[in-house]
Length: 287
Length: 269
Image (cartoon, rainbow over all chains, first blue to last red; front, top):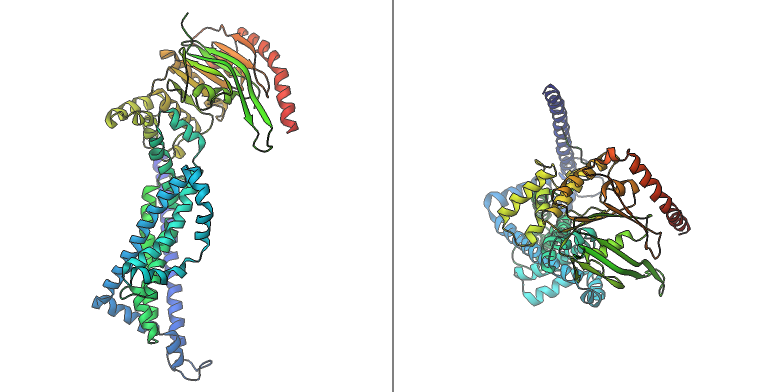
């Protein structure tokens, strides 16, 4: 009992230390960000420092925007509520592209990995399509599917699909033959092998590619919007660029970045919940 | 005469070489092994002599190039449903908890979840893992994983146990504990066991009969010894009895040449 209490006390102290270290790190992060914004402000505010590159003191502001203006623009977007529609559209495009691309990748990956004939037949085409710079497809999709969300979703799918596909393919190929033989000896039928062995193994590989694939779905949505649309954050940025409104461009980029960070956070949470069975690289249990 | 629980008849396994086209490798040649009902039979042989090949044939995971397998008198085709197979390597599904691993076989057979869980808990208790139901394989020690694997097999109550060096990855102490536990579980309902090992002492301590294999290629039995040591046994203590030492000396004498051959061959490759 006493031993346990002592260990508890020690680990408590260690945990406090850890928390303090984390707090310090967060502080440094904020300071770094503040520093960057301060530098940005100092370099672009007209008349604050003597001009050394541009002859006209307002030129820097024109090219690089101003942090205060950018933040003000973001504030107006969120307080006025105009941004939500655009963010919502981008989010829907991202999620749809991600969900459909993942499903397709999963199904096709499983199928090709389990059917040697199909896989040898499809192999060169899969490789070719993966090697193709698919960004080029975005304008074609706009022509085919119009300027609504469909073209962005389809474009996002072409980006997400290959990531998931290759991961699932790999995942199925690398199912331990012993685990497989064991499941067969325990009486699993072909269908049960698929459901209880191949699928869980493949999904773990899907999750390992989750960060990449949701990121690409997001890129697909924004690039698609940028190339032609009437809604979405990509559209906002494109509009602003058209009139050289650099502040709005930066505001859009900042919003997208924050949005991507939120997505990434959500993905990490889901991953932690679903992959508890996976050993972590450095696992020392804090007593 | 009742037919044996397992009979390997004149089994020969030839593999086509993967590296060199047209070349063949005969792992096992003309091997006949019978395991009687309730009998504990061990097969010992030098490393790399095709012991696992024999077991895969008995399990129905591999069909022999020639010869046949009979289970309780019936010719085997496909997976051997009457057998439980304990693998040498890690065989648990890493994405399933200990409990879910143990009940996997019942789940495959369509047993109701509540019932399956109840029986899995009983079996985890029987192998001494109560309280570890929710742990995933990577959170268990090697010995614990072997126990889960054992429970996973025994829950299906197979008539025949096939064991492929199941404890070879464990440290000596854990290994002896597991051997005693295996004997205890086995003596409860006397399943037929075909136990593969390269460890002569383990084979003698556990078995009713020990079959010694020649070195590969073309492995075949070169000796068969009835182990007349009394049961119940404690694998630790039985090693010290004069009869054990005598048997060991006799069998080691037979095996030595084969081990040397196997060693020489592995040096060449």
